[in-house]
Length: 238
Image 1 (cartoon, helix red, strand yellow):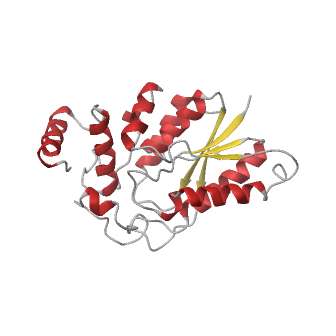
Image 2 (cartoon, rainbow, N blue to C red; image 1 turned 135 degrees about the vertical axis):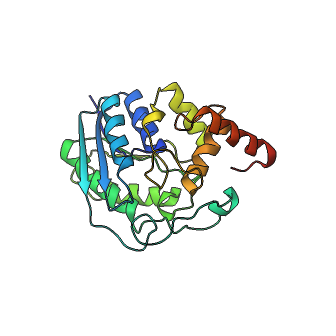
């Protein structure tokens, strides 16, 4: 059976990516990172989603905490921004070289277990504009992989798979629902409270996706969802 390493944060995108890899028939090896995030809720979600997907192995890696990001440092997380503002510039929630580190660890893992694919749920659409989610970034990584490992320099291949890269959030959710991704066990909010705040950038992008997909976010109760829909219908904002 072909093997795949899946970078799994416990969020909506990476969880969908995991189930895409499963649908394609890969034996699944999940990789999750602790890097000083504000809360561990997403990590617990990653464990649950990995269990449901039936991964062969789930590694959780501890990394040093990087400074200079609202997700790991004493910088305020943006709240209440419009969708236009979210996509306008690189936000303070960008974590220095995060995806570069993640993919490097995934590459080591992939070569160790002789996997032929690394899946990551990065997306350049309906996203916060991070520099390490762009198509040219992914292509640069593939070029490096092709020249960086014993496997890829002796006739083998390791493909960096980004099946969500050019998809809108609503399209990701539609695919996920077909694949029965347990979105009720995913977490996107930058806060680790009982319910998502619906005000941070990632909450707004997630909610927009569910609205456009025509389904309720299972993390939002029905009464609150009605309020969200009313606001959206009034001015296409969240």
